[in-house]
Length: 198
Image (tube, rainbow, N blue to C red; front, side, top):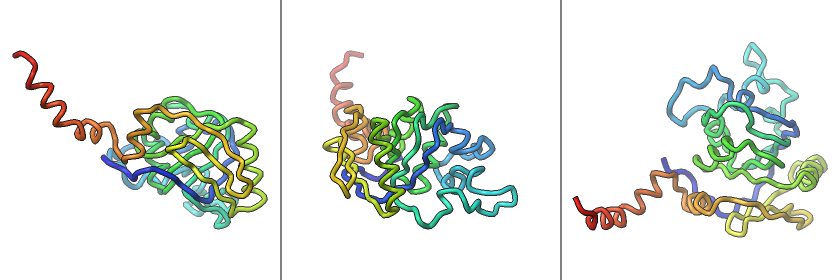
């Protein structure tokens, strides 16, 4: 399933300064029955967003109209726990295209890259600067430049580089998942296959 191309994203951000956010908090297990990547955004951080009677919890950041944007800023060790890819689906389906943290669980990071969410790992010091900037001004913008692999605080110009696998980077830039990448190479694969002895 193809997803949005990612090139340069300039956006405000939603701060979630909580460490060790695991995948069960991102999308509780009771919402994993669906197999299509649809509707998961409604239950992103469900138990943190809503009371037992489904009324919104006013003190949770996603329920605060002050904060918006396509970038989620998480605390250290974001996406730990079970390997459910639904966690990445819920982040994407909610509308986030980038998650920033000082450390990601490997499986969550890869699941994000597979569905079009860019995980940007920064230093602990730069993460604190981002949180401080958003706390001072909720309209603070970040620029995520995938071609250059940089993240920049627009107000100050402070910037850091981030790493990404070259294959995943190409896929993100083109909006490909793994199947799209192989489909793009169909003629090359057919040509190679034709040269193989039976």
